Amino acid sequence: MNYFTSILLGLVAGSFSNVCILRLPEDKSIVFPRSHCPRCGHALKFTQNIPLLSFLALKGRCFYCRGRISWQYPLVELTMAVLFLFHAWRFSDSLGHQIIADVLSFYLLTLSIIDYRHRIIPDELSLSLLVMGLLGSFWNPYLSGSSEYKFLQSAAACLGGGLLMLFLAWAGEKAFKKEALGGGDIKLIAASSAVLGWGGMAGPLFIGSLSGGIVALTLLLLKKKRLGETLPFGPFLSLGVYWTCLFPGWYLFLFNPK
Image (tube, rainbow, N blue to C red):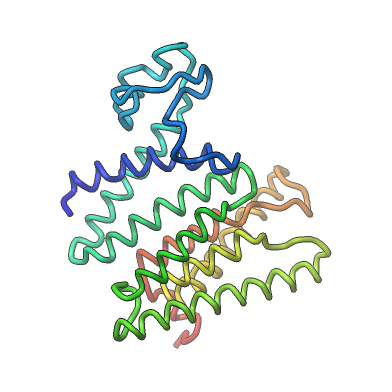
C-alpha cells in the first residue's frame, strides 16, 4: 500500500470518523440521512463533502447558510491521513500490521473524542472492534502460532482482559464507593486484547494508568480539577493500545525486568 493511497484512505476514514463522533452519542444512524449541514440541515452534494478539500474550498463555511463549519472536521481528517501515512512507513514490510494499525487508529481516535466529550464509549465501536479482532485472528500477525491457535489466543486474551477489567471495576467501586471504570472501558480492553493478544491488556492498562495519573495530578496541581473529580479513561487506554500496536512486546519488561 503506497503512501498516496494511505493518505486517501486516511482522509476517507477521517470523514467517516466525524460522522461517528457526531451521531453515535445521540443514537443516530451513521448511514442515514446522508451528510448534511448541522445548522441548516441541507444535504451536501458530493463536491461539498470531499474530505479536507471541501472545507478549504468553502473557506470553512456552509455553502447554503454560510454558517461556520467546525474545525473538528478537517482536523480529524488530517490527523487520520497523517496516521495512515505514518503506518505505511512504520510497517512498510508488513501489510497485515499496517491494516491493523489503520483500523485501530480509526477506532481509538473516534472513541477517544466521544469519551472525552460525552463520557461514553459506544458499544457500536467497542463491540464491533471485538468481533473484528476475533474473526480476523486467523490472519493476525500480532498473534503467534497456527491459525487455530491464533483464534484461541485472541479469545483467551479477550476473555481474560474483560474479566480483569470487571474485577478492577468491582474493586474500585468497593474502595471508592463510586464507579471507577465504565462498561465502555471494560469492553475496550476486551476488544484490544482480541486484536493484540495479551499485550492488548497489559500495555494499555500500564500506559493508561500511568498517563492518566500524570494528567490527573497535573490538573490538580494547576487547580483545574478538584480531588474526587474524574477523567474519562478511554483516551488514556487508547494511548496504551496504540503504543502497543506500534511497538508490540515493549511491555514484557514488566514481567521480566532483568
